[in-house]
Image 1 (tube, rainbow, N blue to C red):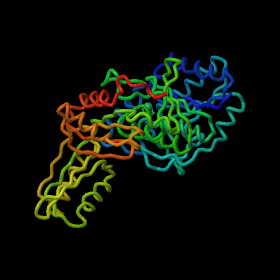
Image 2: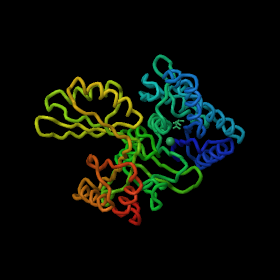
Image 3: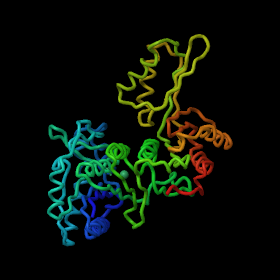
Length: 409
Ligand code: ASP
Ligand code: MG
């Protein structure tokens, strides 16, 4: 007997038949003696369709109205789920974000959850019913509807799980777990049985799309175990849990990549205090998040600064830098959005040396030039020419023994 939150993604609720299948899965869990709260995404493709509609009427859609629009996708699936459950003889009740309420700040389009009272959800469970909660949406203290960012239903699920004190949060998706790398790029990718929160966080922020980053952050902060699994099979998927010692036996647990990166270089800048501040203050004022930064000194008191930004913000950042270049006396500005970032992640790196040099060797032996490098305790990232992305991912997957090595148990 456990209290379980089950979250189903867009492909799992893509049509009425699938919604009925999901109801069967939830009620089976209930019939086995558990209490269940459900969190749903919109039907697959629906959020994209809504974004497209908005762009047809306003070139840069108003953020507040955009959230009013985008939150409708989940309203459809939760109500259909509740009806289907009733049809099958179960009690279920749908909840929009403001009905719980899922309280957020007022950052439209990527709001942060600030608190969730659990009374409404608990009451339905106590009465033997199934609460069905709209993912992805919340409400501000002024009553405005917000959304949590693409993929944000995962975060709703974990936050609800924490709020009601669930034993586990199950994330049902269209793949059967978290993989050592993207199976679409590398046929040898294998499902990981157990992964630590920290590794999962790195993987999610470095390009693995299976979980919303903030959901992992939340789960880690509150020690909420996650089970990422397929809604189309009964197999166990990947458990995202607290790190334990045995996890360090494996050096690298995953290889990720992102093509959504761009690089900007400001060359021949006078080497004096305040230059980096002059550039990066303006970039952050424009809400552009800078990832890697490298500075190298030239002869004659000049320096070059190179950094990466998300590809979507490339034009904005380039414009700013061109403007600032004049003010700080930089001689050249260059940009390149045909780059990619490949990364290896693993808690095993903490206590083993030589992982970075091995990564560089593997890339070199395939003739791949490294443009930038960054490291943290449990990850190493290299920026490379975009056209080598797949080659690099496969080479690293093989080179670190992930093609056939034992999956972590
Ligand atoms: N429907 C939203 C999206 O497509 C939220 C989610 O599915 O997690 O991004
Ligand atoms: Mg998702």
